[in-house]
Image (cartoon, rainbow, N blue to C red; front, side, top):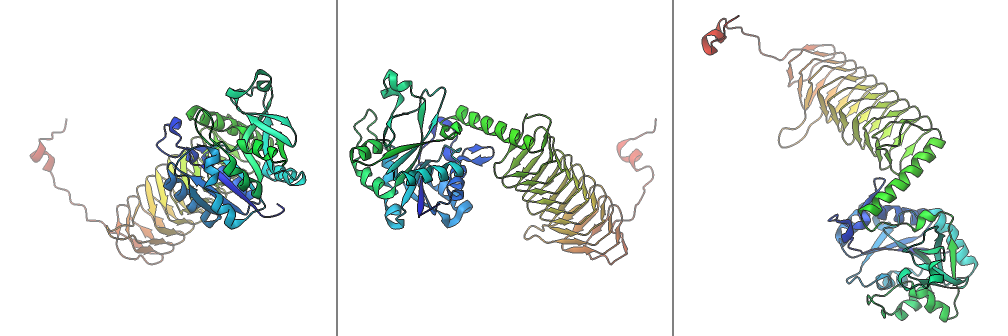
Length: 463
């Protein structure tokens, strides 16, 4: 972007119609909070500073954005919620301190205003020397939206309830997103009144105020009519999800990703799915996950900020903040918890949980096993029912298992402990001391058989 720019994002609404008990702007579209869509678009468009206006659920929204964006986002709290014009007034100290040439005003619950639209509309805003540029779209059914009326340079916005029949026939609608010359915005804000049925201050009134002052008010009509869409209730949120997911799946399919059905598939806008990947029904891909070419995900799998290597298979499994190497096979009914790193060609079978561990190439963890806080080498074989006992009630410790070790069924490894390269543990063994390379460790009680005990104590008789 040319010149210093800022964005003010309105996120103070209570969202009572969502019935969520949380901030409306934190409700998710394709696994991503709506407010994150808007902040990302602004930052990707080259905006230098972002100020988010919070109100209801302010602490929740501010904590979320601070964790995700750090000091790239600052906040101002709208103490009373008296309309959009009133909300933007709380950004005045931010604008006066930062002094951007132009500022975008965006809605935190309208996730589809893209960075490309923001860049293109700013270019037109500056080229025409507009004091205010409305981002608009033409809708076949504009019912409920404010209509953009007038001529270029002298536009205004008429709400549906206030429009004449002729104005209701206008297809161009207001998206709720604007570019302002910052000095013009600061001059117009004190002039916005609340002489209306709701007694609120509407930012849309700035168009008439600036036109009356002899300044240009123009419009940028985007070809993507979805940019005007927002969500006020759960039905609206569902519509946004369905709209985006269909668009996302269609685009990936055109790029060479294989889908059998769209049913139950959700893919984050921040995720990367390479051509040649296979996405099966019931798959949810969250956050900044990456699925490499040839990988098969699903059915009924969840990836959350996880990287899946080429030709890996993830079946009915949940993976969080982890990596999976090429050709690995995970599942069904397994879980990779955060900070798990699975090597190439690894097999992790049913009812296996891995947490905060590294699993070396070609290792097999077939079934009913827990590997936590461990460093496992390559070519290791885990029998059924192995547990790394990593917590003593006060602190956690790690286990280390060398290359090509064999861990027998129902082995308990009491951390901190190591099993050397090529070493074996006998089935049913509890390991409390390090096992040297190539050794066999047996740590179980000798079997004792008491003849006729069952007959004498519980009356058992052979039929």
